[in-house]
Length: 602
Ligand code: M6R
Image 1 (cartoon, rainbow, N blue to C red):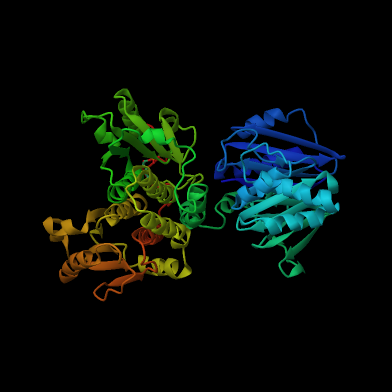
Image 2 (cartoon, rainbow, N blue to C red):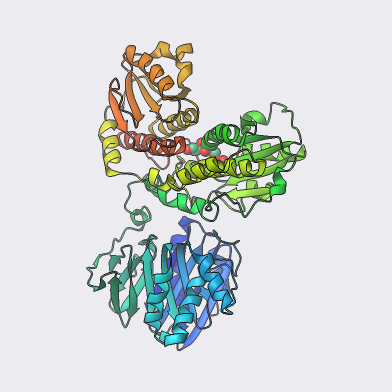
């Protein structure tokens, strides 16, 4: 995810910006840049890859007089990670940095291009600076030009703009993406989160959506839709480690809360009005392909299983899923009409990587679904779709699972479009449901506080069964994995219909069953399975949008129109359950014992 910093003052600006950007690298990035106006001189540096490349490029540059400055770390969304696509983006005499999405950028870009304006990058951001200069060239009033510009933007964004037309100001606006302003005497700082300014500023103001304004002469003038407004600064935290977690107790908790937001990034530019488009894929990849095999480990294996249900049901293409460590040694029969998909958060999992190499040696076409660009798995694959979840720090994967599953849902529709195995009405229905996903992932106070209260009842017993059917079986597996990883309690995911074939022998009041009961998929079937467990005195926590009287505990979900929306909403509930149980047990949620984030050995 992109990160923004800004500074006005008379300290060495280059260093303040580079230090600030360093604090944002944990969000993930693939290029970075800075722009500074000092003594009427505008300077700009950009570099692809690590921040040290930008440091190297700027090593002979000094900016020790008074000036204004902005910086950015970019996580590629529109356009590849190149220097031209890196921020700050340049007009003729102004620079802009931006985090978020300008949804109507294509329309704005066309309009500007028709007036002869030349675009250098493939980004949505560049439209901001050209629009600003267009208005400023007409009326010669930079502030008015900036307000007119942001009036034109649709979407979610946080942006900073500097211009030679007003070389003592930074213009800013926030709508949906995070941004704050730091203060110390006459110095003013901007950043996407606290950490870049801790130790530099003493007070902070967290901008609200819809606020915009300018910083000049040690003062910030703030506006919203009702005009100019006053604001109250607050003391800035001093603990960086705490600030990186944005106030959450653990990275895993933060990442659960982030899911709704990052899903917009995952869908951006891919979920279109009437179809799914993957700019990174060539339809030729699917030529002569009659079936799909997916290989992955752990959580990524669970998203693969979910994807297989979708691919077979909606895209009508046979799909098999294999655990990578099993696949490697089973002497699999591989056929050239199989598309080989690997799924991995890190892109470095040894078993998955080896499985991919085997498939390539057998001449199969390959596609990876991955969160880390340029990782070994991405480099080894013929094509890759990035999940765009941003860096995931918690060892227990949450947002990576959510975004992998979303990519698989989108891929299903993409394949269905190519194979013409979906009617246009059904496609529109799916796309419409997809648009609701960010909402289904929102963590509400109601559910989180309920999970917190309930967690105290689930700390003992002789084990947990997470049960579900169909798409909700992989979710049950994932719910159980989350719980065992961070609570060290024994948990198993099971297809609900299989309980009577053995596991029900364990049923008693000390067996905890987490029942995933979606209204939109086989509700009556799962209901009977859960009733059978209730009859044997099992303690049941049911999750459903339909009231279920027999359950000991019940979490009511709100979505009941599409299985995937129920899926994502229930996924959040299971993640919160694992989190709250683990916290009560006093475990290290982010670094559970015996586990590593990236498993690069067999
Ligand atoms: O990076 P990968 O997705 O390839 O990692 C695979 C598994 O090691 C990973 O999903 C693991 O199961 C997580 N700890 C689950 O929370």
